Amino acid sequence: MGNEENTPRPRTERRDAAKNRQLILDTAQRLFEQYGVEQVSMNQIATEAQIGPGTLYRRYKNKGEVCLDLIKDSVDLFFEDIEDYLEENETVSPNQKLKEIISLFIRFREKKAQLLTGVEETKSTNPLKSRTKSPLYMELHQLLVRLFDEMTAIEQKPHSHSIFKADMVLMALSSDSYFFQKDVRNYTPEEILELVYSTFIAK
Image (cartoon, rainbow, N blue to C red; front, side, top):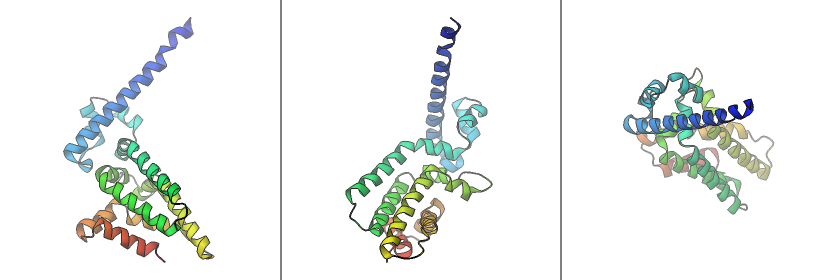
């Protein structure tokens, strides 16, 4: 009997957690659209959503995690596009595959600029370390390393330095670097693609 009484409780808690999550995301999305990601604080999200800061921080450690949850579906679609491309172009050279993945990422960055910046610019004692631990960075980094390794195998070089090269490509495409080149240096996305390719990949 005691078990039957206890059964609905976890389900109710799960439902409340799901409701809170949706409330947080809807509120954050509205505030981000209204004020911009950089101007919105975690406390502001909690206040507007009418929940305690503790409830918010239990689910999201920082604003970057909120942004990542908001673009989760888009990130999944982005990686599906990459998988589809790689499956359909198995015979294409690894350097051309790298170029296409960078092109897809630039298009993704353009479409989701604000939220991606929010994901990358997490306030922490070591923002660079935080950035490289994001699931988006790690998955993309693994992909690039694999393709750089393939290039090295074809060229039969003794050292690939694939991890270093993948880091450098992703640094060049990080929000601050990418938008500096675009907004201050006035390069177009197409020019940035060609320059990153010729600097780090082209042979």
